[in-house]
Amino acid sequence: MAFTVFILQLAVRILSLPMYLLNFLGLWGWICKKWFPYFLVRFCVMYNKQMAGKKQELFSNLQDFAGSSGKLSLLEVGSGTGTNFKFYPPGCRVTCVDPNPNFEKFLFKSIAENRHLQFERFLVAAGENMHQVADSSVDVVVCTLVLCSVENQEQMLREVCRVLRPGGAFFFIEHVADKRSTWNYFWQQVIEPAWYLVFDGCNLTRETWKALERASFSKLKLQHIQAPLSWVLVRPHVYGSHENDHKCFENKC
Image (cartoon, rainbow, N blue to C red; front, side, top):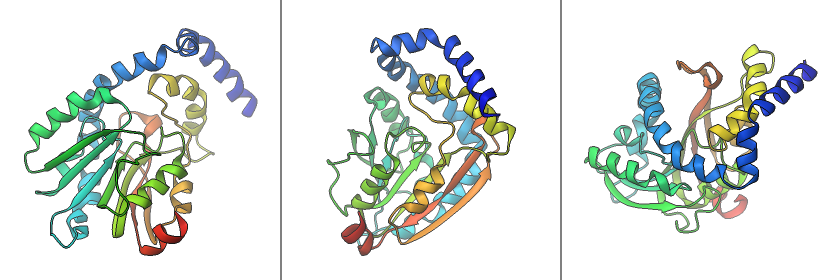
């Protein structure tokens, strides 16, 4: 089976040769970051429609983590087009981080459509290096469909741990690798070389739950699901939350 995957991956790479050439010349990244927000605007309409129930369930208790002021301070990592805004509680103070500056105009459109939120700032930064965000400064961190494309999952989770106040929480929804015995995992492996380039560094075969299980938080709630999505390759998901404590920040991160 491994040899079959190798041969089919080779065929995919050959068919994707123009993209690989542009990537070698340093042009593909620029092209991808320009067009990707336009794709994501359309994709997220479909994704939110099909995942609305799961998002409502996951984000239903965000307000419980508000600090002493009563207002929830939320940092969204990989905020993209702001597709999660409508699920956040009224009065929530939102800071957004994304490495792609081309999302900004789409993000501000979402802000204008979600007047129940208090928008604070948009930071152009990778999730692995959010130095503009102070230690222990936010109540909640959210990321959805982000850990599939960061370069270093462990470093990003350390940054999440650093910026969360003790008693805060990290909420996530991520597509992941399917079970290795499935045909879906077989095709995830085959398609991944092209998928990675087309979708701005997204990995189909990441076993993201392992990084989440290793992360230095006090309590992990994680569920594996087959998401009700049209795109079969990204149906395997994990979603849930991590809670933070003093020990995580002071001793482990």
